[in-house]
Image (cartoon, rainbow, N blue to C red; front, side):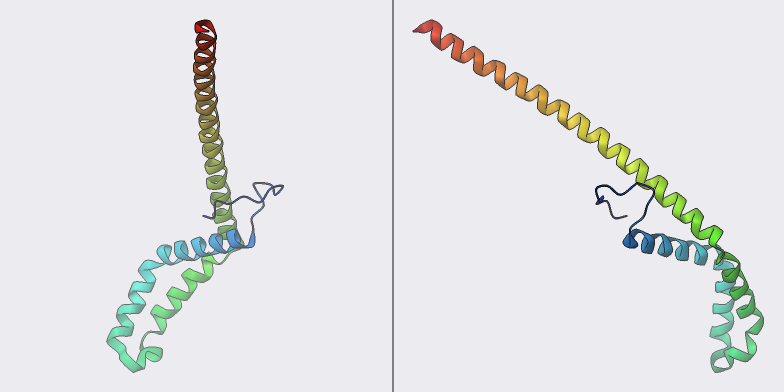
Length: 127
């Protein structure tokens, strides 16, 4: 996931690079979902050799049907929603980490400032 955020762009709006990632995620998940059919076609293909187009029609058709079933925009939208949810979680975690870092820096500045003031005030007392 590309973690750079374009200022002014709403969180739910995806850049072309993010859309490409969503599509790749959908593609991977589709092949995982249809793994049974792909495996059956692969075994048939290895056994058939050059006659794969004639001997493995049934396996090929089942594999293509499974993939075609997942080519519905509903599944791509589900992947997009998952991506946006992950993006929101990441941004919230980043904001929390930035807030903690800011508090640490403020605390360190207070401690370093008070030490400097103490040293400078004790220096004046010695004079």
